[in-house]
Amino acid sequence: MNYTEQLLTVMNSVGDRELIVICDFDGTITTADSDKTMNAMAKYCGYDSEFAKARDALYQEYAPQVEKAEGDEKRKLERKWWTAQMNLLQKAPLTPEAYVDAANKLNFTIREEAAELLAYCEEHEIPVFVVSAGLGNLAIPLLAFSGNLSMNMRVLSNFVRYEEGKAISYTPVVTPSNKSDHLFMELSFHDKYYAVIFGDKNSDLNLLPPEISTSVLVE
Image 1: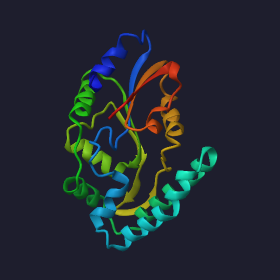
Image 2: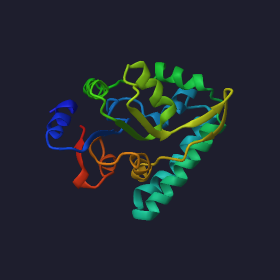
Image 3: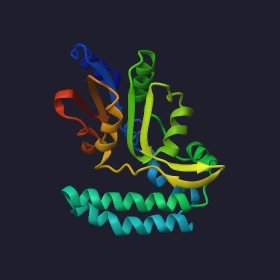
Image 4: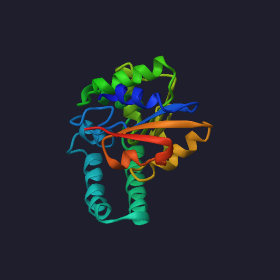
């Protein structure tokens, strides 16, 4: 079954609860072979740039530690790693327009079935929460270019904040292991709901208790 068919199957069993959709971005809304939003600006700047070299140094430092860690230690290491990445992005010579340009130039393709799902949700006023440990500054223009950014959508991701074209800060980091923390804050505004969660990794799926959600692993 495609994304929309999965949603329709669940829709018949939610009763009087509000149906919502929760969706990862990289590899779920985009194709598996698309660039990853958190890595993409290094490619855009050039792998020989100081920014790209600094990002690679962070990868070499943290990736082996995160791979071995579990539980709270893994969460702490991911938070340090993502915070360091966002610090680099804030300090990098990047303007807001650079992300739009990168979204146009790099290898990003929206999955056809993901676009169909988002269009269906917009038509039927089903709230959509895009929860991503990637980079929201890229996810937003990619959704807009493909015609999939809508009023019923909330993007929970990592954003560099700009004022008058200058990076001044960044939002609280969203990592693979703290997605549910950010999501619960948003869902506090929804009283009685049932969620269909789409993701290409198990870490994308275990965001809500099974009694109020159905998880769909995307291949």
